[in-house]
Image 1 (tube, helix red, strand yellow):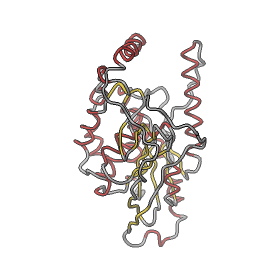
Image 2 (cartoon, one colour):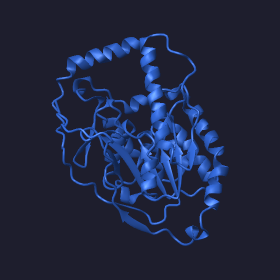
Image 3 (spheres, one colour):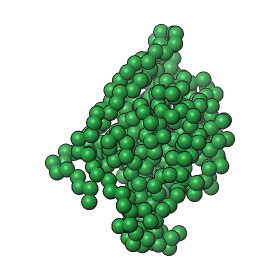
Image 4 (cartoon, one colour):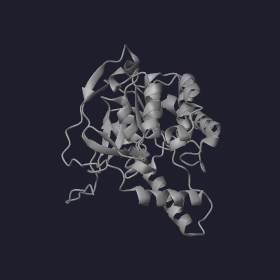
Length: 328
């Protein structure tokens, strides 16, 4: 595995200049378009990033379905944006599970060493899969309102997207740096939303959700202590991710944390275990979710839900940079 990684790095260095595409950053992109959300958002489900660990989201959704938990809106990041889009398009977990269960990592990672200046994969296979499995072509056609988040590579902003081209937005939210090339959308150069906010509870709160259920797929810290340089680097990254997820989820009413420790981003050999871990983690929180629902005024459940048009601006970074970024 390490030799393969070294070879990939070597190939990247050799072919880095071969890609003709050059991203030109826009320091003043156009405002994001508004989108429709339910006028009364009782329950917002926030699905976090996590690669193959996103299979746990299906287990969570199955338990919520069986318990009769209503979902008024979904907010997704990276893997959570894929599962969120599939479910918002077709709210039937069993059909989604049967459709995507046999998808392998190599179906998605179409590595192109000739055009790898910005990422090992251009995301063509991922886009084809999304087009194949999604009936809706844009957000407005979805059965459940959906917001996905991506990170602006130039401005450093978190970009919430809830209208327009569905596949393009989901692809942007899933563009893991180094693995996938950035995605151009809405006059911006976008990468994985998890770079900034892997579990975007804040977006759900800003939309006025009464109850926010967050699914956090961040791994728990392994008990093994590093004994070499790469181990220290890995451990440090794990600590950073753990703290980042804690900060991102602290405003949720209910946090569901499937136990996925030791499962890598693209480790597809443990799909069933990940799925079941999602079911178990959700099952443990059903009572708390129902208690939150019972505390809501009864009028919240009367009559059909109407929708209203809202505008969410990109979330700027806390640290302001005076110098604009350079595309070189």
